[in-house]
Structures are given as structure tokens and as C-alpha cells.
Image (cartoon, rainbow, N blue to C red):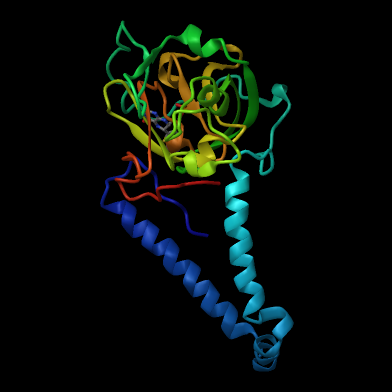
Length: 266
Ligand SMILES: Nc1nc2c(c(=O)[nH]1)N[C@H]1C(S)=C(S)[C@@H](COP(=O)(O)O)O[C@H]1N2
Ligand SMILES: [Mo]
């Protein structure tokens, strides 16, 4: 099937491969429709139970309601693995935003709707409960690897520091309207940056990770802290977080600007 192009290829190659993927998809649908015998097609379109106007419409409404609920749910977890299956020598890939040393006065900067930005230390982050995950990290270049990460849940972090809401209260499952739609993150030198939809940010497997295989993350893997977001491809897993912010408009995103899908979810 269609092979997704390397993100390291020149920008001009990317939109072409995306366009080709879309073309293949619509062609397959066309081929499928053509393969259905005419009698069967008539039976489907005449069947009120199967394809009547009401049922698909209700499905759309149900889907909208479901979206609101999934913010805080523990469903749709990605598969996890026994810790022994984790790679002993995890791969590294992508050095944008890591080409200069970590600033000596590094703090995790969180911009807020009200008041000055929060400036947090690693001790502030580590004060929250530690969670570990062993899962298959996937890069859109075509490789994947079972890896073992540790850190704090982004949702716990947001609850503790009352982040991501317009009211300035802790995120509340009963009032998802209060949540901003996106989280933005960037490296201290702004050389790499991502935008994450709030639902994925609040996912229970999404971590601010500071350990890999039980050890502090090394510089090439994103020391001192990085995003591990298992419901997304590698591109969204920003290494070396400098600043975090929340907004209702899409934060700029390094690979989306280079032709990739903004959401790149699994
Ligand atoms: N700062 C920064 N983060 C980044 C990248 C990057 O170039 N710079 N590359 C991304 C990509 S494409 C992948 S696949 C993963 C790789 O993470 P790893 O080096 O820990 O394997 O980091 C992501 N995060
Ligand atoms: Mo990647």
C-alpha cells in the first residue's frame, strides 16, 4: 500500500505523497462501489432500516456527545507491553530544537490566561504521581519500537497547576466548554514546536516524561522533560519542552507546516 514519506525529505515531496494517499483512498471506494452488484445496491438504498435518513443523522449526534465524554475517559487506551519487551537501546530521531545546549537557567514555562507565566523546576514536576508506560512508539517514517517511559500524566499536571481552562480553575469533566481546544509546546530555542488537541493532551496515557528505561532521559531523547503522547505519531512527541501554552486556535506545528496532517493520530 501507499508508503508514507520520510519527514526529513524536502518539503516539496510531502504534499505530493499526501495527495497520492488521498487519491488511492477515493479510488478504492470507487472500485468498491463498482464491485457491488446492481441488485444489491438497490436493496441497500431502498432499505429504511439500514440506510434511512434517521439513523445516520442520529449517529452524528451521538458522535458529538461522545466527543465531549471522551476527554476524561479511560477507554481507547493504546496497547501496552511487559517491561521486558522494551527496547534496551531506544532509537533517537529528530534534533530540531536540540542543536544548542539546554539553557543553564532552564525552567518549564507555562503561559496562563491570567497572571505571569509559571516557571517550574523538575522537582515541581516530580512532586506529582509517577506513571510508567511500555508501548509501541511509532514514527511516520515507518519504524516503530516498544519503549518504556516514565513521568507524570499531563492531565494530573494540568489539574495540580489549574491549567488549560478559561476560568483558571482545574479542568472539570462536567464543563469541557471551559477547556481551551489546544495545548502548544515548543523547545527553549523555538526550533521545534507542536500543537495538540485537548482531548489527546488529557488522555490518561499522555505523559510529561522524564525517564526512559527507568533512567533520566538523555539529551538526544529530550532531557530534562519531553512529551510522550502514545495516541499520536512520533512527530508530536516534542523533546526538551521549554514553554507550554493553551489556546482555542491551532498552535503552530513544525511538521504540519511541512505538509503533514495536523492531528497525526493513530
Ligand atoms: N525537539 C524535538 N522533538 C522531536 C523531534 C525533533 O526533531 N525535535 N522529532 C520528533 C520525531 S519525528 C520523533 S520520531 C521523535 C523521536 O524521539 P526519540 O529521538 O526519543 O526516538 O521525536 C519527536 N520529537
Ligand atoms: Mo518521527
